[in-house]
Image (cartoon, rainbow, N blue to C red; front, side, top):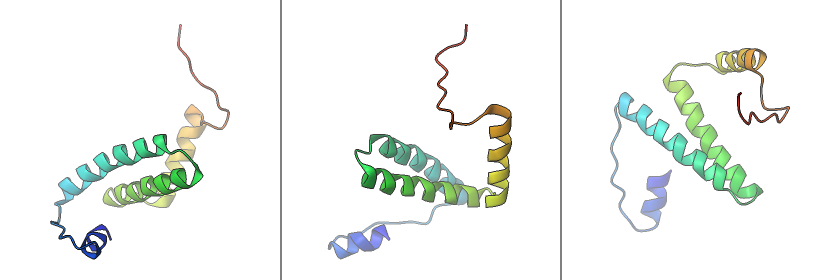
Length: 96
């Protein structure tokens, strides 16, 4: 959609189709970028917008690695059982 928005603004977007390897690397970089934007969000609307962008990137990465929703949820549940989650709001300050 972004190239169309650029065209509608009277500009000419220069695009190319990425190889699978380039696409995955680009998604990984985009995940870092979008995660930073989530961290900087100043209100609910910005937070929701940026979180939506992160989810879009995660969905594409999952597809690129042939990971189903079911497999991802299973792994998430397994890790939560073995390592805990964030619901308890426990923060590890240090280890002595």
